[in-house]
Image (tube, rainbow, N blue to C red; front, top):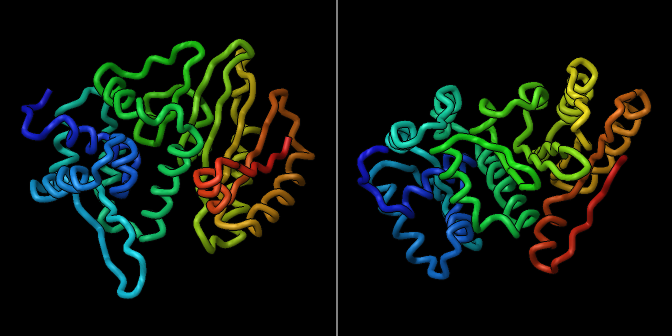
Length: 277
């Protein structure tokens, strides 16, 4: 391990930023399940001052203040590389450009964080410990346990479709009926329809060209978080046409939800979930 020059909580923040790339202060607070937001802000401020992370915050006059967004700086990337065994050098190289990423990309990363916190709320309190464990000891997939991964860990996983599907996140669980593979995609606001078509066609192309239907696979599930219902309606029509020519032996299930529906689940404990089977 690298020389300890930051606290354990601050180290946890670095691993969360490695995992999700962009996280806001409220999300950090929820992962660390700490009641005092001032303590969270002090940890984040110290990391910014030590140049381990960078802060993106642009207040807009006359609007409610949104929480600041954070990402790994060069010193932070160096720290996690030296501190942990399981670090993908190519991934670290890719996230060097975080400071040049668009606001839309930052929002997309934060929507993914919220999707995890809301949809898998029974697991999030243990997630920082899970990340720490796999960074130190590697990935060991066990029976009847839930696993959530982002591209930071794809190079260590052997699911043949991952390099082709390139989801924003991947979920693995092996139970009595077999392995359930789940891919999560976050759709940007105002995305062109041609981009949507390309994404969906790429999914079906990978399913047709790659041998992935092992006997121990139960199903492949695709979760798509959309900006609005119009995108869901369009995708359902487009995917339905492609499913007519899909001859795979394993169940392929699509789930759709808008961002508002996702956040309403947090507010009202309800979750409208659209499916195509």
